Length: 71
Image 1 (cartoon, rainbow, N blue to C red):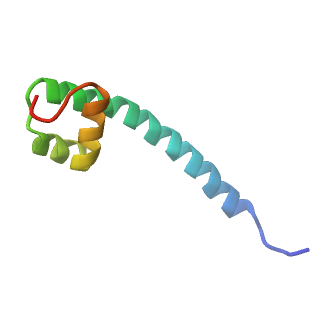
Image 2 (tube, rainbow, N blue to C red):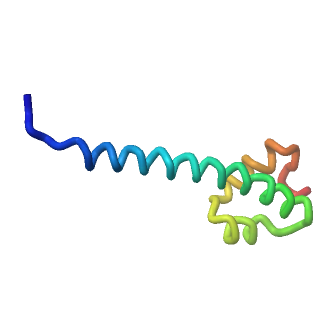
């Protein structure tokens, strides 16, 4: 048996779960905006800068929505 107090670890674990849920919600909101920007003709580089995503992630999101590079 040890005397380690798990309360701080539990607190951080709960915070991590809350923040992960918030991140997933934000991702779910961000992807359609990336697609909308691409459909509106916004340059990929501008989408990358505005969204904080990498070029590859923007390409992945667009391809999943049926938008290929150059469209």
